[in-house]
Each structure stands twice: as structure tokens, then as C-alpha cells.
Length: 211
Image 1 (cartoon, one colour):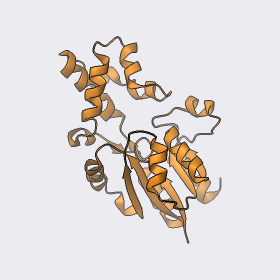
Image 2 (cartoon, rainbow, N blue to C red):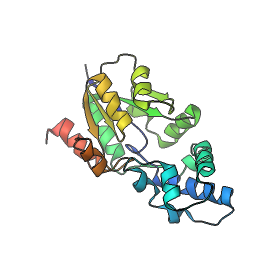
Image 3 (tube, helix red, strand yellow):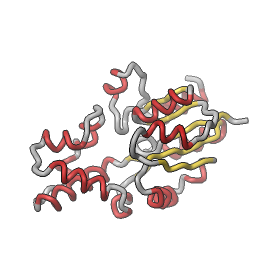
């Protein structure tokens, strides 16, 4: 029987930095009646990758009505018109193809809108790689939400980009392969005492080729 390998989606397989910047600029312009471009906020995700919140980012930029803007951002971030800006990381497909030969792959992602998440997965054409696809609530403790959704499934390892994924691995008593190119930086993981990986290919090399 193949070992079960659990993947996170956003920031692990899916690059959503552009979406986050566009939604932020649109939200600021709507609330404050300004004319920012999304390129003005290219540092939004890198700022958050240290573990800081979006509200702190706006406050650091001295943007008025920061709390109202973030509330609007949360409301619209998963609208289909914005999800279209996401793209798979360059090594996502070849990595999934390689790993599927030796492992049973599951995808567990935290989203507010399950229907739009499944719509996006269909558009990305990656559902075929996974024996199990689960969308959990992004409210509360995401690691606990993911763990409960797996219903005591035996997990060999978790591949993810946030502390929620690390908590899932802790609860599941399995290995954790964190990546540093998503929503948490290399420095963030080093402070946690965890060695991060700079690409999915590095994880493939570790899990398949033992290098």
C-alpha cells in the first residue's frame, strides 16, 4: 500500500501572490477612493511571510481605514474573478507526477468558499493527481480543521507552507516538509527550528531519490 502524502494548496502548489496584491489594491481603491496599482503592493506577501498580518502591513504603509480595507479584502479574496490570477508553481505538475508513482496524494486546503475552491481546482486540472481532496474552513485553527477532516487517516508526511500545516503534522505524528517560497519565509521557519525547502523538486529528491 502506498504511503499517504498530504499537500496544502495555497503557497505550496499554487502561486497566489499576484491575486493578493490585486485584491489589496482594489480594496484600498474602493474604500479610500484612490488609484493605486497592484504593483504598489508587490511586497504584501513577502511582508506577511514573516508571520505578520495584513492589517499590520497597511498600518506600516500608513493607509487610512486599514481595518475596513482588510475586512473587504477577506470578503472578496476568493471571488472567481480574482482566483483567475493564480497559477501553479513551475515545478508543481512535474512534482505531482513523480510523487504519484510512489505515494497516495491527498490535497487538504483551507478556504472560506468551498465551491469556488473546487471550481479553481477543475480549472487548474490537478484533481486527477489526488485520491482525496478536502476543503476545510479557514476560520479558527487551520491545523486542527485539517486534522479533523482527515478522520484519523494514517499520514506519512505533510507538505505545506504555514504553521497550520506544521500543526497538522504534529497532530498526525508524521514528517513535515515546509516550503519557504509561499506564505512563510526561510527566516520564519528557521526561528521555528525547522529546515525549509526552496522548491517542490527538492522534496521530490528527498522522498523519491533520497538525495
